[in-house]
Length: 114
Image (cartoon, rainbow, N blue to C red):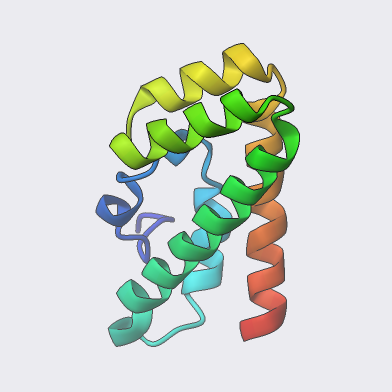
């Protein structure tokens, strides 16, 4: 049996940070829900991730022009690899920061929901 059986990966493909998702932890979170709730919970979780990551990135970009460019890129195509290219260029620790934000946000969601 696939250890990621609860995740609808297609829902996560629409984000630029898809490669950094803690899939096993997300699956462990989703297994506590009824099967008919999984997609709705996943969509809610993605929305929470989006807000947390955007807030974290904006707080860590120093220049207003960089913040504007980040927002422009995410608005143009949220799944574009150009976003991560921009972030790693402007903020070398951005990938690790996103991973930490994802893990911390998932933990907070577990505490709040379960």
